[in-house]
Length: 93
Image (tube, rainbow, N blue to C red):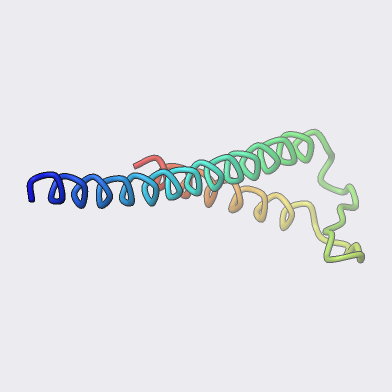
């Protein structure tokens, strides 16, 4: 009886460990993706800051590029940066 109880408890704990490990890997992948998004947004912002305000900037939508004002592109990148930072902080908790 004691052996059977220990075995069932072990199997239950082992199952929980497998689930937890899978969830941890998933969170690590999400964290890595958000860090990549954050880095791309930051680098794009740094490059946009070097351009003059009258420079034509284009936004990629699928295979199409659409003319956008520099300010709109910068606001979009700043929002992506903030969203990524928020997602990273929530994933790290």
